[in-house]
Image (tube, rainbow, N blue to C red; front, side, top):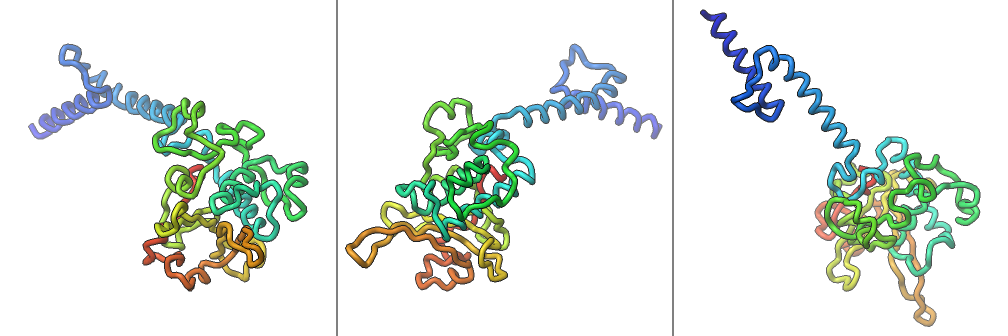
Length: 290
């Protein structure tokens, strides 16, 4: 009797599993025991294949607003992008490239410029255009470059919320311009306010409501700097925005490269990248690297 009851329970379980795997069979066409036992594994395998196909073929599987084909999926591509991105940003501190439009030299402009140039083909013509201070620092990203197979072209920056749709490529959803707030809201994901979780190429954001028209500020985390690292791995580079000269009130660009340990002692506590500063929004990672 015990074995008979156990067999009956097992049989009922198999029938239930077969209905769940197939989306529920009608009572008029209930499968036989032998069919159910064979179809459950097959249905599970088919469901797995369908899920994989959906993921691979999706235009935005993670619904983050960035098309999957613009995201850097391989470890090598992500690392090479980071090396180019941070090297380009750091080099602006030593010698700003003439390829960086002077009208777009601000904190977000440094991110846009370094991002765009990191995705180019870094051949000899590119090096000549950039200037004598520039050299090859890593292989090019393999998935695409702006000259080869770029899914977004020069319009790299998302400007509004929502999952990606193909129609986004035909309107102004993506742009070649993005201010600091747009970079934060639609092109990067929050990681942490703890610097120990930051990686090279992450962005730091600040929000200063008293700053008027431009309350958001962004910096680029370098980690270990390529030049004059002093054995430290907490370097950042950023553009402060235009500031006044002493002679005649003209405006000039200011790019700074500094350690987080130094910013921790900034005279104005609102600019300290520490967890208890409510004006420090934390570290963010570009969505193409997620």
